[in-house]
Image 1 (cartoon, rainbow, N blue to C red):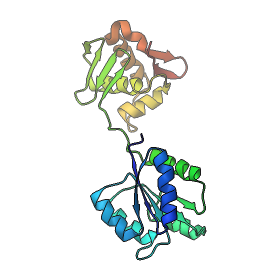
Image 2 (image 1 turned 90 degrees about the horizontal axis):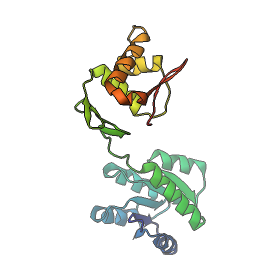
Image 3 (image 1 turned 135 degrees about the vertical axis):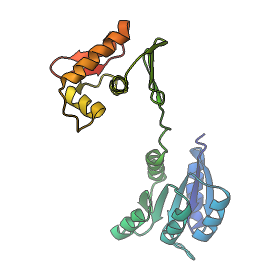
Image 4 (image 1 turned 30 degrees about the vertical axis):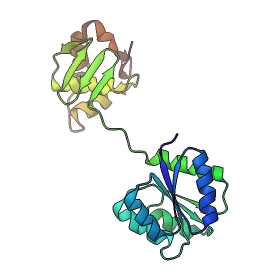
Length: 225
Protein backbone atom coordinates (compact mmCIF):
# COMPACT_ATOMS: atom_id res chain seq x y z
CA UNK A 1 0.00 0.00 0.00
CA UNK A 2 1.14 3.54 -0.80
CA UNK A 3 -0.46 4.95 2.38
CA UNK A 4 -0.73 8.27 0.54
CA UNK A 5 -3.89 10.28 -0.01
CA UNK A 6 -4.65 12.08 -3.27
CA UNK A 7 -7.51 14.51 -3.77
CA UNK A 8 -9.19 14.95 -7.15
CA UNK A 9 -11.06 18.24 -7.58
CA UNK A 10 -13.16 18.29 -10.74
CA UNK A 11 -16.78 19.22 -11.48
CA UNK A 12 -17.14 16.23 -13.82
CA UNK A 13 -18.29 13.22 -11.81
CA UNK A 14 -17.14 10.82 -14.53
CA UNK A 15 -13.61 12.23 -14.40
CA UNK A 16 -13.49 11.96 -10.62
CA UNK A 17 -14.66 8.36 -10.81
CA UNK A 18 -12.08 7.49 -13.48
CA UNK A 19 -9.22 8.91 -11.44
CA UNK A 20 -10.49 7.38 -8.18
CA UNK A 21 -10.86 3.89 -9.66
CA UNK A 22 -7.41 3.92 -11.24
CA UNK A 23 -5.56 5.36 -8.24
CA UNK A 24 -7.27 3.09 -5.73
CA UNK A 25 -6.08 0.11 -7.78
CA UNK A 26 -2.56 1.52 -7.33
CA UNK A 27 -3.01 1.60 -3.56
CA UNK A 28 -3.76 5.29 -3.03
CA UNK A 29 -6.53 6.65 -0.83
CA UNK A 30 -8.63 9.07 -2.89
CA UNK A 31 -10.69 12.06 -1.77
CA UNK A 32 -13.12 13.86 -4.08
CA UNK A 33 -14.53 17.37 -4.40
CA UNK A 34 -16.70 18.84 -7.17
CA UNK A 35 -15.42 22.40 -6.72
CA UNK A 36 -12.80 24.47 -4.95
CA UNK A 37 -15.06 25.55 -2.09
CA UNK A 38 -15.91 21.99 -1.13
CA UNK A 39 -12.26 21.02 -1.52
CA UNK A 40 -11.09 23.67 0.95
CA UNK A 41 -13.65 22.45 3.47
CA UNK A 42 -12.46 18.86 3.10
CA UNK A 43 -8.77 19.80 3.35
CA UNK A 44 -9.42 21.46 6.72
CA UNK A 45 -10.56 18.07 8.03
CA UNK A 46 -8.21 15.73 6.19
CA UNK A 47 -4.96 16.85 4.62
CA UNK A 48 -4.08 15.00 1.39
CA UNK A 49 -0.55 14.35 0.15
CA UNK A 50 -1.23 15.66 -3.37
CA UNK A 51 -3.96 17.59 -5.19
CA UNK A 52 -5.22 17.03 -8.74
CA UNK A 53 -7.09 20.19 -9.72
CA UNK A 54 -9.25 20.87 -12.76
CA UNK A 55 -8.82 24.41 -14.05
CA UNK A 56 -12.38 25.00 -15.33
CA UNK A 57 -14.79 24.64 -12.39
CA UNK A 58 -17.85 26.57 -11.20
CA UNK A 59 -17.88 28.88 -8.15
CA UNK A 60 -14.08 28.86 -7.82
CA UNK A 61 -11.87 27.84 -10.72
CA UNK A 62 -8.67 25.86 -10.32
CA UNK A 63 -6.41 28.90 -10.38
CA UNK A 64 -8.43 30.75 -7.71
CA UNK A 65 -8.52 27.59 -5.60
CA UNK A 66 -4.75 27.22 -5.88
CA UNK A 67 -4.16 30.79 -4.70
CA UNK A 68 -6.37 30.13 -1.70
CA UNK A 69 -4.97 26.73 -0.74
CA UNK A 70 -1.34 27.86 -1.10
CA UNK A 71 -1.91 30.54 1.55
CA UNK A 72 -2.13 27.90 4.24
CA UNK A 73 -0.80 24.64 2.83
CA UNK A 74 2.30 23.61 0.93
CA UNK A 75 0.77 20.73 -1.01
CA UNK A 76 2.01 19.25 -4.30
CA UNK A 77 -0.49 20.06 -7.05
CA UNK A 78 -1.16 18.87 -10.60
CA UNK A 79 -3.51 20.81 -12.86
CA UNK A 80 -5.96 19.11 -15.21
CA UNK A 81 -7.45 21.04 -18.11
CA UNK A 82 -9.17 20.58 -21.44
CA UNK A 83 -7.44 23.82 -22.40
CA UNK A 84 -3.98 23.21 -23.74
CA UNK A 85 -2.89 26.83 -24.18
CA UNK A 86 0.69 27.55 -23.17
CA UNK A 87 -0.40 30.59 -21.16
CA UNK A 88 -2.59 28.41 -18.92
CA UNK A 89 0.30 26.06 -18.24
CA UNK A 90 2.67 28.90 -17.41
CA UNK A 91 0.08 30.62 -15.22
CA UNK A 92 -0.65 27.41 -13.34
CA UNK A 93 3.02 26.71 -12.69
CA UNK A 94 3.60 30.29 -11.52
CA UNK A 95 0.77 29.90 -9.02
CA UNK A 96 2.57 26.97 -7.46
CA UNK A 97 1.43 24.02 -9.53
CA UNK A 98 3.97 21.23 -9.89
CA UNK A 99 2.70 19.85 -13.20
CA UNK A 100 -0.02 20.36 -15.82
CA UNK A 101 -1.73 17.63 -17.81
CA UNK A 102 -4.20 18.20 -20.65
CA UNK A 103 -7.45 16.28 -21.05
CA UNK A 104 -7.98 13.70 -22.39
CA UNK A 105 -5.09 11.73 -20.90
CA UNK A 106 -4.14 8.11 -20.35
CA UNK A 107 -4.42 7.06 -16.68
CA UNK A 108 -0.89 5.69 -16.90
CA UNK A 109 0.41 9.15 -17.81
CA UNK A 110 -1.36 10.67 -14.82
CA UNK A 111 0.14 8.03 -12.54
CA UNK A 112 3.63 8.67 -13.90
CA UNK A 113 3.25 12.40 -13.30
CA UNK A 114 1.92 11.84 -9.79
CA UNK A 115 4.89 9.64 -8.92
CA UNK A 116 7.30 12.17 -10.44
CA UNK A 117 5.82 15.07 -8.47
CA UNK A 118 5.83 13.08 -5.24
CA UNK A 119 9.50 12.23 -5.75
CA UNK A 120 10.41 15.86 -6.41
CA UNK A 121 8.45 17.23 -3.48
CA UNK A 122 9.31 14.55 -0.95
CA UNK A 123 10.78 16.21 2.15
CA UNK A 124 14.52 15.83 2.52
CA UNK A 125 15.62 13.47 5.28
CA UNK A 126 16.55 15.19 8.53
CA UNK A 127 20.09 16.43 8.50
CA UNK A 128 22.30 14.36 10.74
CA UNK A 129 25.31 15.59 12.67
CA UNK A 130 26.62 12.09 13.34
CA UNK A 131 28.29 10.01 10.66
CA UNK A 132 29.58 6.46 10.62
CA UNK A 133 32.04 5.67 7.85
CA UNK A 134 33.66 2.28 8.19
CA UNK A 135 35.42 2.14 11.58
CA UNK A 136 35.18 5.92 11.97
CA UNK A 137 32.41 7.79 13.82
CA UNK A 138 32.20 11.58 13.59
CA UNK A 139 29.96 13.75 15.78
CA UNK A 140 29.81 17.31 14.43
CA UNK A 141 28.02 18.64 17.51
CA UNK A 142 30.75 17.67 19.94
CA UNK A 143 33.65 17.62 17.44
CA UNK A 144 34.31 14.10 18.62
CA UNK A 145 35.86 11.42 16.43
CA UNK A 146 36.30 7.77 17.33
CA UNK A 147 37.86 4.92 15.40
CA UNK A 148 37.05 1.38 16.49
CA UNK A 149 35.78 2.88 19.75
CA UNK A 150 39.00 4.81 20.44
CA UNK A 151 38.57 8.56 20.83
CA UNK A 152 40.88 10.67 18.69
CA UNK A 153 42.35 13.83 20.15
CA UNK A 154 41.91 16.27 17.27
CA UNK A 155 42.19 20.01 16.79
CA UNK A 156 39.22 21.75 15.15
CA UNK A 157 41.00 21.94 11.80
CA UNK A 158 42.01 18.29 11.99
CA UNK A 159 38.40 17.34 12.71
CA UNK A 160 37.10 19.50 9.86
CA UNK A 161 39.63 18.06 7.43
CA UNK A 162 38.88 14.48 8.44
CA UNK A 163 35.13 15.17 8.20
CA UNK A 164 35.46 16.69 4.74
CA UNK A 165 37.27 13.63 3.44
CA UNK A 166 35.24 11.00 5.31
CA UNK A 167 31.83 12.33 4.30
CA UNK A 168 32.76 11.85 0.64
CA UNK A 169 34.34 8.37 0.45
CA UNK A 170 36.43 7.74 -2.67
CA UNK A 171 36.09 11.37 -3.81
CA UNK A 172 39.46 12.84 -4.70
CA UNK A 173 40.07 16.34 -3.32
CA UNK A 174 42.87 18.60 -4.49
CA UNK A 175 44.86 20.40 -1.83
CA UNK A 176 43.35 23.68 -3.01
CA UNK A 177 39.82 22.33 -2.56
CA UNK A 178 40.61 21.17 0.95
CA UNK A 179 42.20 24.49 1.83
CA UNK A 180 39.09 26.37 0.72
CA UNK A 181 36.69 23.97 2.44
CA UNK A 182 38.50 23.81 5.78
CA UNK A 183 40.50 27.03 6.06
CA UNK A 184 38.30 29.26 3.91
CA UNK A 185 38.79 31.10 0.65
CA UNK A 186 40.55 33.98 2.39
CA UNK A 187 43.36 31.75 3.66
CA UNK A 188 46.67 32.71 2.06
CA UNK A 189 48.86 29.95 3.46
CA UNK A 190 50.67 27.20 1.59
CA UNK A 191 49.05 24.01 0.33
CA UNK A 192 51.66 22.25 2.44
CA UNK A 193 49.36 23.05 5.37
CA UNK A 194 47.07 20.28 4.11
CA UNK A 195 49.96 17.82 3.87
CA UNK A 196 51.03 18.62 7.43
CA UNK A 197 47.54 18.07 8.82
CA UNK A 198 47.10 14.83 6.87
CA UNK A 199 50.39 13.55 8.27
CA UNK A 200 49.21 14.32 11.80
CA UNK A 201 45.83 12.70 11.20
CA UNK A 202 47.48 9.53 9.96
CA UNK A 203 49.62 9.37 13.08
CA UNK A 204 46.52 9.71 15.26
CA UNK A 205 44.58 7.14 13.24
CA UNK A 206 47.46 4.69 13.83
CA UNK A 207 46.56 1.31 12.30
CA UNK A 208 43.78 3.05 10.34
CA UNK A 209 46.11 5.59 8.74
CA UNK A 210 45.38 4.09 5.32
CA UNK A 211 41.85 5.48 5.51
CA UNK A 212 43.37 8.66 4.08
CA UNK A 213 44.93 7.83 0.74
CA UNK A 214 47.30 10.01 -1.24
CA UNK A 215 46.40 10.44 -4.90
CA UNK A 216 49.77 11.36 -6.36
CA UNK A 217 49.84 14.59 -8.30
CA UNK A 218 46.30 15.47 -7.22
CA UNK A 219 45.54 15.36 -3.49
CA UNK A 220 43.78 13.03 -1.06
CA UNK A 221 40.75 10.80 -0.67
CA UNK A 222 39.08 8.83 2.11
CA UNK A 223 38.96 5.11 1.42
CA UNK A 224 36.98 2.62 3.48
CA UNK A 225 39.20 -0.46 3.48
